[in-house]
Image (tube, rainbow, N blue to C red; front, side, top):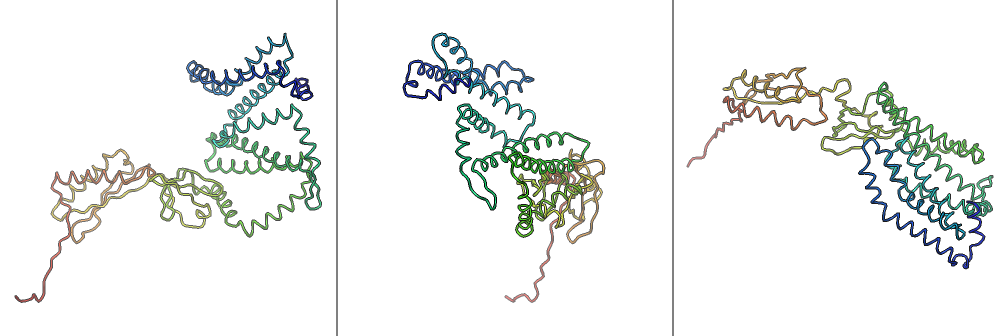
Length: 424
């Protein structure tokens, strides 16, 4: 196939490009692309209708190569027929590029299937495959080597060191590729760690964070070493970074260190219910720098980890997920206290969320000015679901039963005495 690329480069003239043989090959390629475009959706629907649920993984991979596969089949058939009558260098090149596209798409899909990366990485799959394919095409045409020679001749100085523009581009691309690879493997390790039930959730999160940092560092060092760079400059960079960290990044460093402390001392877990200042909610995410608290109204609050270390935090589920809820009721002095006790207890026991162990309890709190203060106390195991709706249902049931049994809820009486009334 390299002969076809060399032949095209050496004969890239108007006469060759406008010849009948060349135009015919271009028409075949355009026709193959058109057939692929119009048949793409129909072929996908056919595969989806014929595929059982167990084969969805294989189907997803096939769908990714439907378009180039249709083009490839058409090009192979026409190339085999046309090769008997004329040269088919253009078709040979097109077949090579389409094969490269199929291999690249399948490779990226297999990597994603094995590693199962995040949604942000999945969104970049098409962009990555196109970039890789373009680079392969430029390399096959010999353009990359020519560009490399030109870039290598552009020299600039950095301190006492001399670098070429080609080396600078290689460093940037190499570090980007190595970090992307580290992200993929970090996601792979995290996915596997999250399935290890023998480890505590905090331990799993902490190990995955440490592994990501190690992978990033190793990826960058390996990339720079493979490009032949002297790594002694990293010590200078590390010193400058340390000074900058000490003066300008104290808060950021404090949040990261606090995040690891939280994961190590196990004072906060994912799923815990916290009260942080005016915020009350469920911990949904623990990151290196911050923790996400989802309030009962659905609003998510981002709390810097330093706040969780330096301020007083109420963890309602640190050792026990049971949460106590109390309901205050006042009855008149004319009503039966025992009957009110019975109604309040039954109202709580009839609710499915109220636990039977510990049992609901009713207490007589005090004899107030207007009536007798009672308190109903009970426990639930799912405080993250909120308590307003539950308390509302119990209050309504108590009110209904109080009306049936003539138990009054008093209102305050006031006696106004007029001293020295005006004479009429």
